[in-house]
Image (cartoon, rainbow, N blue to C red; front, side, top):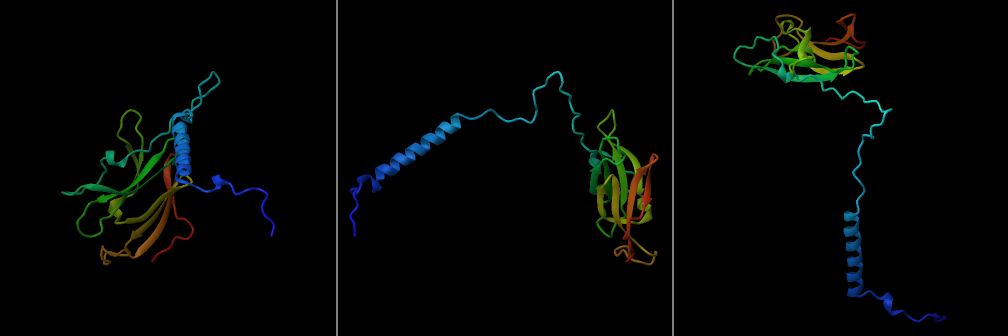
Length: 192
């Protein structure tokens, strides 16, 4: 076995002073990095003469600000589902709200309403009724896809069916065409 030409180095053995020196150096780097921070990042660029300002993001109408056309007696109308999106292609979002009376018993029928922002007031305008509560329908799912309102509707095949247990399921789709919402039934719609 050949001996090493280099003698055993004393500094290769760690001592508490080495750990203290390392900790001090790390603390110094952390302190220095907290002092020398880059400027805060912003998404906006400095405005120049060629800069065009994009319109501010529009907020969809809030259904909590609307008095819906429901006769609820001593209970209040509540919004149980909502979805927002641009339905008429004007660049401004509309909100579709599913609303029913806050009944303590049974399954109250839903109304489906389309709201649009009002130009001169904070109160949204109710512009369309897609499902009237008089039709005794409950909405189980609501979504806006590709500028259309899609909903799964639960109903009753006759007046003899208890109001707790809908026995008919239907899918509906509404699209804005020629100044009004036109209903169609998407492929795959079925009854229970």
